[in-house]
Length: 83
Image (cartoon, rainbow, N blue to C red; front, side, top):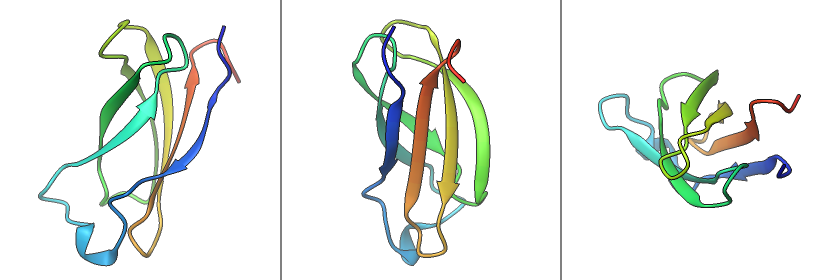
């Protein structure tokens, strides 16, 4: 079992990058297989939680996303059986 991925602030920072009509992609590390994958983030919602399957090992990853007023995106990723 791997530890939870720490909160990471994305590179798509800045108020001009926060557009609802253009999907934002952020990189995270899968808590199961350790591979770096990209997830789509809806930057129009400040706080969100959802589950997305790893594109490599297909296991469910819990995601907590925070979008700051300045456009920075923070993502916390953890395994299904972790709190």
